[in-house]
Length: 129
Image (tube, rainbow, N blue to C red; front, side):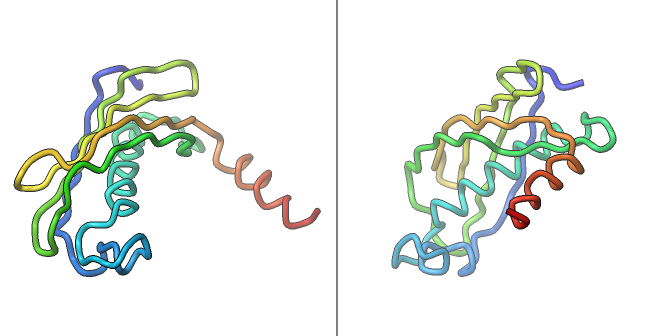
């Protein structure tokens, strides 16, 4: 059962493949904002994945995040997600990211519980239009 207070943490070591230069979001070899956001989203979806019924999944629908500090290649970074609101199929998370020097990003993320097969069929029906 998904309840407020559910938490998760995931960690990476920043590599050149995680940088703004590679992601196309800048020229510097520092942790890219899109990579930090992806880490936060992965953390949130994994926070509740084991609580879903068979055939269910979640999709991200909103991300509102500030990137506060740059992280160099070679440094450890991690994301934390905590469920702050459950409203039917809508789940809201507080998300934060850190490196070994402290807080690097924070914000909110929203996901919706969907039925994977139905969602996929509806999405791919766009190809037939």
